[in-house]
Length: 431
Image 1 (tube, helix red, strand yellow):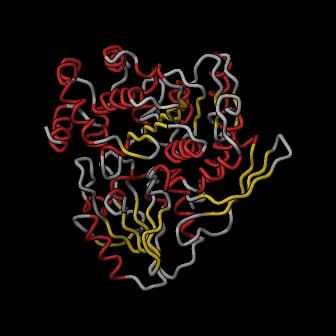
Image 2 (image 1 turned 45 degrees about the vertical axis):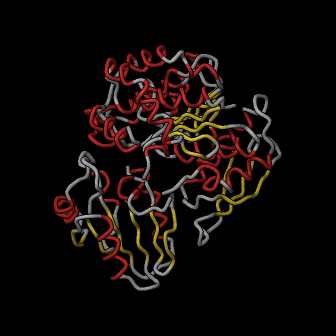
């Protein structure tokens, strides 16, 4: 099979959440364990750091991996979803898994895939864990796909667990309150393994403390240990200056982050907290941490987080897609210098629009569109729903034509935001 034929096989045979939504969700680890046993338990062959959460887990995973790379470690990185190429999910030192490896893996193991009938995500986890073992990584950073307790990645016993912000996303699968969502995310906390919580939230703090106590695991809230203050404005390349202060020790650091979103302050606190805890497990210097944060895009290929696509007009894309993520992005837009705002927006068809549309400014002009994925919400339906909240604009059949129209209608001093759905952003980023 060719690489394209291999992907066609996977998409046609295996239910994929990023394509069909919750119908692909599996609420047990049975298939994952079957596959892991078949491949000889590859996840036991290297230490791992496990990252869960609603918002920020992707950025944090990439930054941790980038720091480890700067320190000289051969670092595996597993994340999801991908933006343009399936292989973005599985990287070693920022290099995507080779096409030939993906093809040979599926070809050589098609019998077990047909027998177990895993989900797309379950198969991808098996592929990643096997690849990291065969390539003898020194360490792997593993991002949870959905939830935590029953996520396919949760067969690992990491050296450290990290849980970022808990927000209103996938609540139909994980629970209808933040507390219930937190209980699912807390499932990655393992016996006597330290856990970092990036953000102290009243609704979830007790859930994490109770789970950590039950497991005898040291628990640290990053925002109680570190304070990050970002510079006022992102640079033309999207970078941002920061000042980090330890609230426990007499330490202060200044540096530059490649990621310019306001929300990155909490993620940066988490990264500093993680490496303070891991100093006895990995040889990582303060210089490595600062360089890893500054070079994260170059080192790991992280895209779509407050990414600057153009300057006249200013064009920004961001993958924030739930209530908490969009709040940060739209608040930062308010304080960004511009004349008029144009928003290219699309969502998936199972998005709770009533939770996100009220966040958008009524004085912007909208270009309602849809990404080229089966889950994409029809742009006409989106426009109808958006008008209920005073959002005015026009419909476009695809993201490319929507962005082209926004550029044509914008003056040099205007701002264009592209977002709403990760899949909308995927069609405009350059990788």
